[in-house]
Length: 329
Ligand code: UT7
Image (cartoon, rainbow, N blue to C red; front, side, top):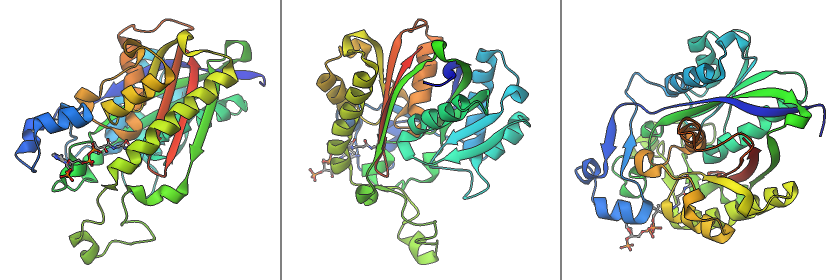
């Protein structure tokens, strides 16, 4: 451990007002409220308006996080937006967020690690703060997956929602450090299990590809499910071992919110009682990189966590990517 540590000093989140229920989806594809609830745990999800790009969702969450931290936009010297649904290919979504906030002192970039983006981003931001080069980072997970979905594909369109969560991370003396351990992993051999094939340089958009909906998210759900549980359990065990903390000491397990069955499977394998496993995907669906920061904000605002409580975060997503972080709140 060097000279510096990091702490979360403010959180915020935002979900656009439009709510899409399982019953609404029954009108769109061949599905049922019962199937969606039983197989995923999702009841509703939020859908952003046409004039709300990802950076607008990020902006709303960031304003709340800055307010909670008692900070002004120009106090921020680093902005990282974890997203796989950026405003455009480039410039990066962090720059659009910076402009909306007027955070003129910030270096900005976005980070693409799908649903693991916030966990990856936390380690990246922390490393940059702990290097001594930056003091206050705004880390946002923001997604507008509604624009990536094939709304005729019942196997994917029922799963995702739009939203954003933000955290202000501050450089602190090392004896006050809140990031106890981190484990990140990936396996590109599984790249085709989950992603958006067309629209990048490997498969540029053509009319034909648009007709085939190759610009939309595709997922082999069953395979992803199986790999997700193992990877999240193993990364959680790894960070707890590194920090010398047992699961009994963990106040909250905050897993990526993709599927209740995955979350409960991870909780069971780790041996943590369900009351200490945070879940809100019934209301938001899977908001990819935004699930964990939205959850953190709900925990913070609901006063469900006290200073110095241990909070274990874990995520899994396209890439495949995964990881875990152990925080001292
Ligand atoms: O956030 C990134 C990581 N992503 C994930 O973690 C997602 C992981 N995967 C999952 O959460 C689950 O695999 C799903 C929720 C996507 C699917 O659940 P499943 O229990 O794995 O279902 P399945 O894909 O094995 O499909 C079971 C059946 C199939 O019918 P047959 O072949 O048994 O006749 C599907 O066609 O359910 C059918 N089905 C549906 N039925 C009604 C698939 N989607 C639907 C639907 N409504 N929306």
